[in-house]
Image (cartoon, rainbow, N blue to C red; front, side, top):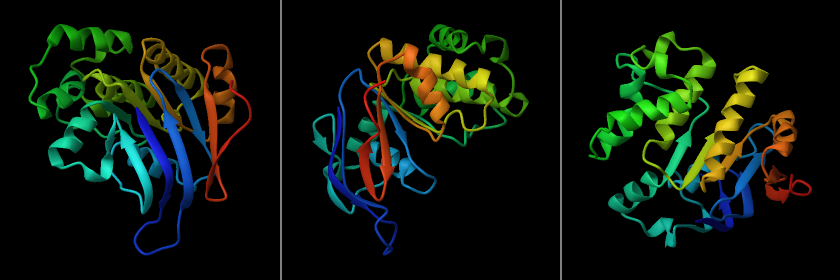
Length: 224
């Protein structure tokens, strides 16, 4: 689905953040991406949905070279990739349900109110459907962000440190939602520095653990 081959990247004219990076995300797979702060985890995720282009190497998404995509091609790619950012951003004047529906609005698709209600129930936010984002807790915001990321039924879910500001109980709840998405056939790539979260996932999902270190991507031991 998404494949990176011998990719290198550096911001501006600066030194390379990483080089020779190869990563394959086949259908239905689950991956953890870890590494120290500043190693490039977020950058890898941004390249996966064409928010950044590599300095060298090739990124292929759904059979197409990302560097060759025009504006419409990039838009089509992003409809197939749901992203949960660490810094969840919402339109604070709109209720949670309308924030979750925004990808439908932007892509010109009809608003399916029953589907939105079902999705909010799935992330246990049905009572907050009409609440404004500032009233949500950290865990509620992350679950709302996950609902928004999957509203278009993407094939791939990218989550960037989604549990970074959550307590353990909320982290496990969010992990379980991602595992459920994976069991339904979605590909999941979760960037995290929380090794305890990765260890806790062992009983829930078979996942590959990858680590960026020394400007390279390495397998961090055996599959979970």
